[in-house]
Length: 111
Image (tube, rainbow, N blue to C red; front, side, top):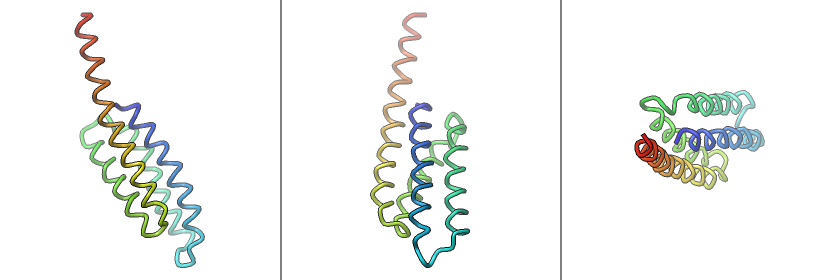
């Protein structure tokens, strides 16, 4: 599960960076504000890759997904991309657990 979730988070890292470039074209936003928010979110993606095995790591991931969807109020395409990455996050968690269970069952069977 951790590998699938980490792959999704790295994809989101790049998505956030590109969304920051789009947000720079908004006349109401300063470059400092855009890169502060994007930088924090990008750092959260990287740090969350290491937190996936810990308690609460998946919950923080869901909060990040919600934040990406809400960022659509600044960059409208993020509504769509946020939903796409939330679906990818769900799939990574759901199918990752199934893979982990299958690996555990196979390990128990051979032992």
